[in-house]
Amino acid sequence: MSEEQKAQEQAQEEILEQNAEQEAPVEDVAETADDALAAAQEEVAAVKDQMLRVQAEMQNVRRRAELDVEKAHKFAVEKFANEMVTVVDNLERGLAAAPEEEATKAIRDGMAMTLDGLINGLARFKVEQVNPEGETFNPELHQAMSMVENPDLAPNTVIAVMQKGYTLNGRLLRPAMVMVSKGAAQIDENA
Image (cartoon, rainbow, N blue to C red; front, side, top):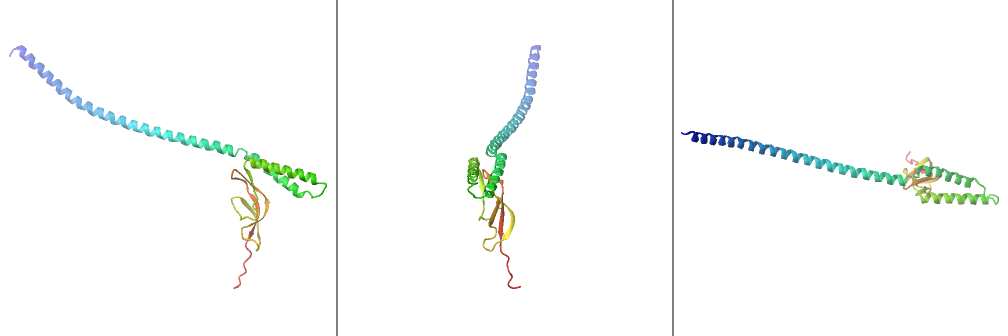
């Protein structure tokens, strides 16, 4: 064999060796690429899930903030209304205590007009009176101060209102203090 042939055979062997070396890494590279692709897809899915959760949380925060603002607007006058309710009580007591005489007529009329104006002003801000006389006792709106036997009325009927209650936008501002009827004592005929 000539040197030229030996060189050609040696070159062919080197090419075969290189091809053999290249085939093994191509498979390794494909597996590595598949693993990298799967990891990237998992990461994308995790980031998508996290993004959706953050968006949902932001919507919840926005809704809560809107509700808080709405409640703040609705009930901003609550402390003021509590103070004005006391003024209404005092005007009503003053009218009840003033004698109905000709000498006090102008004062009574002035107090009555002031009381009406104050009640109308409170009503414009959704402050409503709770005057349950003759109605069924409601523990959500009324506070029972005493119970009295009264055979003429059904049990749990409000007999008298000692102090009117008030609501602000449907929320109880102050319960009405009331006297409630209870059923008449039962006489056991068999005893």
